[in-house]
Amino acid sequence: MANRKKKGRDVSGILILDKPLNISSNQAVQRVKRLYDAKKVGHTGSLDPLASGVLPICLGHATKVSQYLLASDKTYQFTMRLGQTTSTGDVEGELVCEKKNPLIDLDALNQLLDKFTGDIQQIPPMYSALKHKGQRLYALARQGQVVDRPARSVKIKSLTLLSRTSDSLTLEACCTKGTYIRTLAEDLGNALGCGAHVTFLRRIKTGPFALAKAVTLEQLELVQGDFAALDGLLHSLDMALQDYPAMSFSDEDKSYLCLGRKIQVEDVVCEPLIRLNDMNGAIFGLGKWDGDHQLAPVRIFV
Image (cartoon, rainbow, N blue to C red; front, side, top):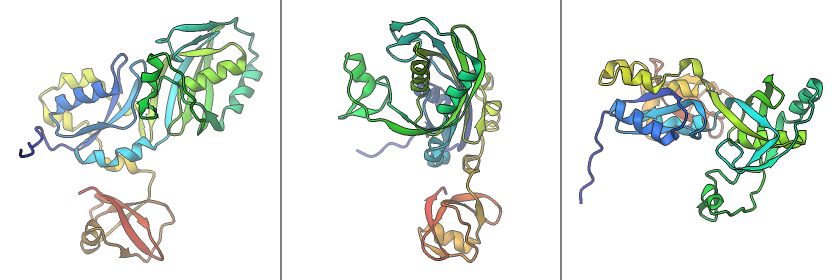
């Protein structure tokens, strides 16, 4: 049977969505796909239904850079309820333990936050999408199973107290890929001796994309059917790669790189990945150094 062509428009770019509460990242992606009538759409790091905020959605050729956004640092604001531990680490779970909240000295609290800043070890939560012997952990957890999970190294680049009450702390954390904020809140609660769970979680930044650049589903629906207006909200895929240095290449060198061939380059930029631009400044791929002054293509976007 012949393969059917995908329906939809050949539209490319990155949409910075402010994902609302109570829908999954996949549901948000499917709504964006319908609004844009796009052939190909994918997200770059899911948010739980109980989390909101920055969700970059890649359309068309931009899906080729999604892996680089997945690896980007993330910044979250979250509130943790002290004195209560739940089965999921957030408000969706059942209450499993309740303790009296300690009197927390501000200096001691800041010292504790300093201890959790930098390279730390985290045990992934059972309610996560990681797999154990081919099964998702959350599926096992829903069956009442608890399995051993090896600790993983993550980095908390900054952890700042924003506000506090007698039974809650609101914090901002900048962290590397793979960090679980629910686990961070639980570990902080355990260190305080009272336990804790997350009641509010909002992602305010992913890589170069901040909440100020985000649009809501409601804003998209206001211009539904107006593809010029919708496309005007998209960012170029180059925006996802701003952390990498750029080099420009002639049409001849571009053609070699696009064919997967290495080229000789006199001026070496000592970075692991290089943005490959044409002479007009438009990105066409990523490259890496392979030997003395040899540049090899890693990913071509055209």
